[in-house]
Image (cartoon, rainbow, N blue to C red; front, side):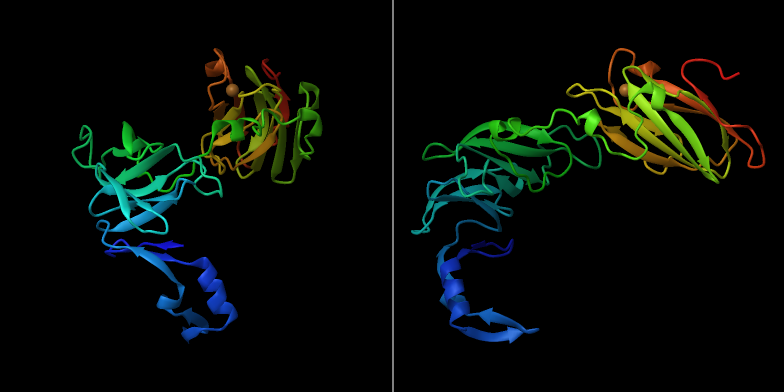
Length: 314
Ligand SMILES: [Cu+2]
């Protein structure tokens, strides 16, 4: 276990085996708040002496080497497990926080590449505003020395990240949700199943979406004071065709419905009027036309519920 403190001069490595041993033999130096404290010397594996300033985060390459970022001296330092000697160091632009080696969180890191995520990247990119682009740097770590391959901006402060080989993800990637297995109580699995049901002040709309329309896309009989639930089923059964849904003032924004899924959004209209809703995820050349309207009547109106697809309500 590598312990690093941003203000520490050394990188201290604790032995997990020694820790377990000390715990089993109850070798403690006291306790705090009822938690036993281990003796520092008893569990020490070794220390990398003064490798840089402000050690922050360490990952391993699976070949007996460790890589630690140094926040204050802005560098990545490669050192050897067991001998604790420094093998290489590379400057970073600038204050490097975390670093990532693909598979670094697993027992078998894929120690070919490493990237450092840098904070406080002043002077690195065009100063476009009070907040500046930060940088990240990709290194080839397959050889004795780290080799900088790419220096690229990241949007916002890059914090911790995990990476893994693409084929691990690819084989497990979910392409669609099977519409037949959709058990959502308000799912409409065909355009024939769409409906609008009032239960007191609650209105439940079972709606479908597919390139390039919502059904129904014309609804009236909603009143101010109603709580409207849009239960939207994405009828698509194709990879990478989510649809979104938005209406002004909705309680649940940024709804993104994957193929075969039903998701719900709540809307409590506050004003009489005709309110448009639309798809928020670019889905086809007709995406811009993917919209509909809800007419909201006064709280005391008795406009009956009506809905249709693509036609005027009579
Ligand atoms: Cu869409």
